[in-house]
Amino acid sequence: MTLTTPPRPLDVEALFPGLAAHRATATRLHPRPGRPTVRDSHVGGPLLWPAGEPWPECEEPHPHAGPLLAVAQLHTRDIPDLAAGPDGCDLLQLLWCPFDLHGPTGHGMHVRLTWRRSAEVGEVSAPRPGPERVGFEGYVPRPCVLHPERVVEYPYIELLAGELGERVEKWEDAQEEAADDDGADGMDADPPDRGARDGDGSGDGRRTAPPTYQGDLSVAPGWKAGGHAVWNVTGPGSTDCRGCGRAMRLLLTVDSYEWRSDSASWRPLPADPAADADRPTGVAVGNYGRLNVFACPHDPAHPHRFSVQ
Image (cartoon, rainbow, N blue to C red; front, side, top):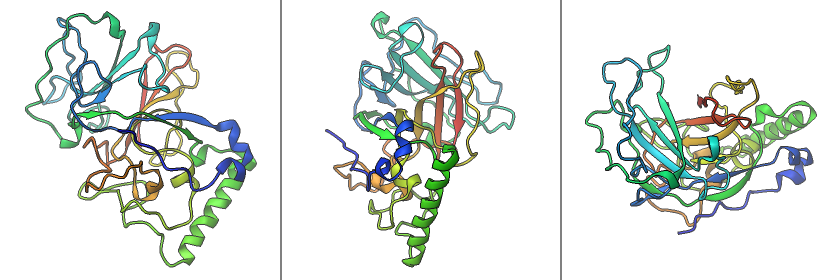
């Protein structure tokens, strides 16, 4: 299967030439239910975990602490925008605790990233059984194969500074006013860029309102490697490396949705008619948002940083 993002509704660089300096590529992963093997890049499948290497457990004290849950593994060979790990590692494995019982608030996530050289893994550990108990079903991904696709992105609107930022915001306001003048926003009833746990953010795949920078022209929704981060919950935050102080780059985005009602133009083709096509992995991060993972481009061995949006 080949999944393709439809062309953007307009050429944003022709409209705002200054954006060319901020252009970046990202690889949309397009996970879809399947039967991945231990050697594949995937979401929710068996990990290429060396036999004899202890399986990681949650290190934070809470009543349900136990083995971490395998979420995804990604080979750099399959994903052009996945930066290599420390010492040339080519395989990234993502695990997390299936309970929201961490951090200073007692409601945060506990995420672990493991980098390794895939060629050095000999005998592979048997697949881990599913957890007997989880705090929320959204922490348990459906097994999915990936269909990577490279796309072009531009920064989150609040990160555009100076005259360029002012011009984009003025244009964005005009687009939203035009939609209001039409008597409807042209989208489904879900709040922009946000879902509710008893609903979905898919819409019907059609967007009749004028295109917007935020929804249609800047940051692609869904699971992806590289590109730009969205900051819709907290506003732009610091991503400076705690090891060296340098600015970190977005490594990976884990998204609850493949697209939302305000970003339906990103819905890949061919369209899947299934009611839950917008949530192929079944994963839910926070209030059905996304997890951004940042890495230090100077030294990939430095600790990663995380942001839930």
